[in-house]
Amino acid sequence: MNKIFLLFIYLIVFQSVSAQKDQAADQQPKMDWWGDKDGMLNEQARLSLQMASDVLKKYQPAVDESPERKMALLLIDNVLHDEKANLRPAVQDFFIERYENTIREIHDLKVENGVVIWKLYNHSFVVKTPSVTIGFDIQRSFEGKDGYILKKKVVRELIDQVDILFVTHRHADHSDEWVAETFIEQNKPVITPPDMWPDSKVYKFVLHPERKIDFVQEINLPAKGIKIKAVIYPGHQGKNIPDNVYLVFTPEGVTLAHTGDQSNQEDFSWIDKVGDKFKVDVLMVNAWTVSPDLRLPKGFRPKLIIPGHENELGHTVDHREPYWLNPVRFGNFRTLPWVELFWGEKYSYHPATERK
Ligand SMILES: [Zn+2]
Ligand SMILES: [Zn+2]
Image (cartoon, rainbow, N blue to C red):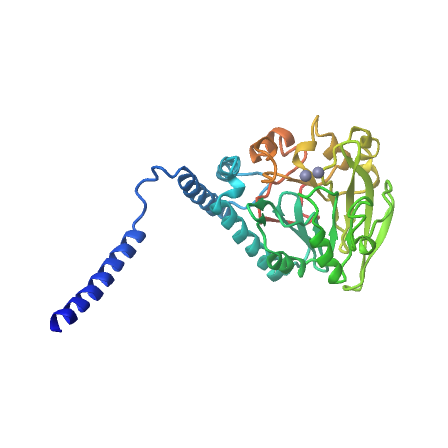
């Protein structure tokens, strides 16, 4: 009997010691990744993104960009131009964490004057003024194996902070029917071109203001009790896809332009003259459409350009627009000032202090 009891005690002690040993082994850093290519690239992505993020925190977005910031953005390009970047847990976790932090920041930051502009992802921007928060092309980001990376609960927390949504066009990297529906549930206006979601129940609740050159319209924000003025330019992606190019006048007098995926030669007939009619403060432009010779930004003549659409992970690598192409496309910042933002970064724009 005693022997059996001793054996029993021995087994318990042995098992718990070996469990502790396993645990200790788990805590050891992995010394090689042989036979695990994806594991290795995932770990490399995790460390690269963390390092880049630490550097970006120290070197904030600025028109005159430091070499440290450029290097961090180049490191990010390198990670995101891995064909499988959208599927790597390190990329997904990093993105979700930044997105959630940004929502908290949008909520907490009190804007006293000027505007604060956040880039969330791709061409999704949120602009907060002292009186209103405006969203452009908000969608649930890129897809992983099981649909969108961002859960509805997270994106709803963002929508709770935003008073109005401008959607440029129907492509999924810019628009999301569920997002539009959620804005409408909260009695907040959603503006799109007329061809979007015609068979959906949201269609009749979405606003389709006239797409008309230089025509200033008022949009009512019933939940806020205010109106916002905007011009809805009749833009296009290619010849056939309607793309609303927005000029939005904030109640405090800052003029914001957002181009979506504007890219149609014939539209230069009005694009060339936008700056004659209006004083544009900030132009959020799709980075890939500016050439040749910056014709699109020159039409708007903004005080500041913020390029968008970098590293859209739903695209193949050749169209995941790299940060390193921005200086090639936008040139010397002294000609037209521009500032590039990574996911979740913000820029505070003050019309009075911005360089002329
Ligand atoms: Zn598009
Ligand atoms: Zn796009």
